[in-house]
Length: 567
Ligand SMILES: Cc1cc2nc3c(=O)[nH]c(=O)nc-3n(C[C@H](O)[C@H](O)[C@H](O)COP(=O)(O)OP(=O)(O)OC[C@H]3O[C@@H](n4cnc5c(N)ncnc54)[C@H](O)[C@@H]3O)c2cc1C
Image 1 (cartoon, rainbow, N blue to C red):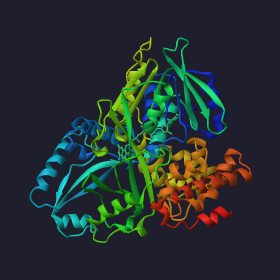
Image 2: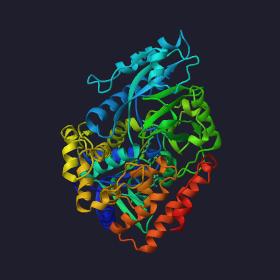
Image 3: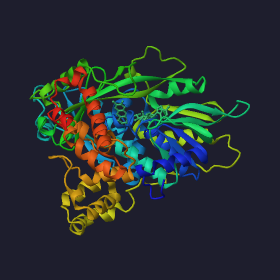
């Protein structure tokens, strides 16, 4: 709401008031990366923008991806050159200019097992991949490694049959944090962002010809309000077909849901100083470095279950372990698995009919449609290309406006926290002294908030207790919980433990032992009494228990669950 982009959860009533009373140029439905990007694109063109998200920002697919900002090496094999080219350009723009604090280069080792044919084939692909980059080259070129060289970088690999490797570079991101930062940057351009607000109907002009806004239900209270806008843009990911139904329109495409599962294992379980990518029968398997962990995945299977909480199956986990163990000297076992998460790819099944095509073969390009005046929708694409998706759907949404709307400028709009980063990074030591914290703490905050780290540090200045870690063995501070409420629109424990921090997937107890402390910090700011704090804690434990009830994660112990439930 404020022009510094702070999304203060304590201002929720004022946000709802604005949504109900103002008239907007563009109303965006959905707060994943596509919706947040669309809000930023439109707001930075000078339009008055509102965004409503049914749950929390990034609570859908945009917190459950492989967290790679990449061209997608495997799409070259499908001759999807345009997609790879565009994605690599976006990757470079994000790493070098738009979000260097969030999007960071990462290397991948591609082990080779067939002596003669594989190296020239993969090598040619990587030459093409590298040549599609822009001229600024913010990530290094690929390199050839011998089998010995490969084992030096990744001693975890079994030397059996290993013929050598390629080393190439892409980039990675905390997807939920990035999405949140895009939404905050939109707010800095005066977009009004409201969460736990579900679009439950669309408004039409008196003659029924044009969509003029949406009826929105406040999921916190059940109250329904009307948001008026000249154009509504549906960015609802795997909920897109449902939104089209709700609008009573026939769109030119359908969305096919493809489930992707990842497991999280400790860094020590796989001895390697680089990420890895392996070929599998159907697709590829990544080992992605993630702080003290590896994220290993993913799967790609058709899905028709509950969109809100997709869960992994036993087969998913077994598939990932088996694929990983094909190349590892010490096999991964279920005991290594700290967490499991599943996400749904919103793949476009063009009306032309991709019917029986396996989801691995469906293009990751996006589709924009304007099924009725005043309503545009977008689906497909990739996290990496969200900015282009946003540009295209805003262009479509404003095409029939009776006033001139400028073109997209988001290639020139760094996300909040990026501006001035180069000057702040070298000053980490001085900041640590100024705020009385360790250099490691400052570096942790810079890596998550960029130059906004000083806003988190200010919390510590005014309350030294907030400098304490949130959970033993994890880098997050209590100050980050307070900041999540006052600047990042966190309304419930889940928002903090699953998405603002990633304790849900990074701790063996899914963040359960930190839940009561998070409730206390949030409760102080949001005015929760004892009963409400207990109810909020219970709500989080229920979420963890539901997740644990699935067969795939049942065998993973949750040491703190009973203890915290008893508090
Ligand atoms: C396993 C997996 C791995 C992936 N890995 C990568 C990767 O490494 N790199 C990459 O580039 N891409 C990757 N992707 C793709 C990428 O994650 C998605 O393309 C992207 O996150 C989709 O974002 P979205 O905003 O379109 O959808 P979502 O993030 O799902 O957002 C849609 C939002 O709409 C909201 N919504 C729905 N209905 C309503 C309503 N009625 N009212 C209000 N809000 C509503 C939902 O709550 C949701 O938050 C991956 C995807 C998966 C599943």
